[in-house]
Amino acid sequence: MILTGFASLSVSGCRLSVHIDEVDIEILKLLKENARIKNTEIAKRIGINESTVRKRIEKLEKTGYIKGYTITLGKPVTMGIKAFILVQIVGIVPTDTVIKELSSIEEIQTIWELAGSNDLQLYVECTNPDRLNEIINIIRSIDGVKSTETTLILREIIL
Image (cartoon, rainbow, N blue to C red; front, side, top):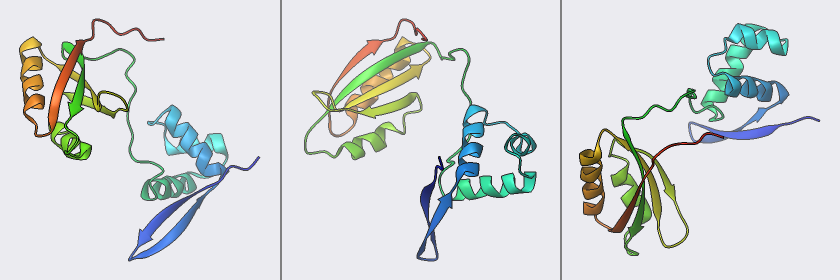
């Protein structure tokens, strides 16, 4: 089975289609498994030379297949207090406007847009209950926020 895909790349107003093949997909799989893997190790596992790996990774980065490199924590790292905050937005204010304001709050780690009675769910990590209260008050002061509901996380169970 041959797996392929396409990405669009805009160069000086011209759109180019960029083809990825099985080798690119194998490189992506190896990088997903270990973002710190060396190009020489990728080359050895796939059976191509290191310069080809380097050029393909550069192509995958430029075309958006690779957005960045990250780590996966083996143990949770937290600043002390973890909470979910549900947010309802007034219908006339665009959700993206509220999200833009929320994204400036450092302690908000993740924002989910929801369907249902609440519009957003936020995951917050902060140092102490007083700071959480400050964050909630900041959120409530954002134009368009109708209400919030906060749930403290007592423990995380990793399956």
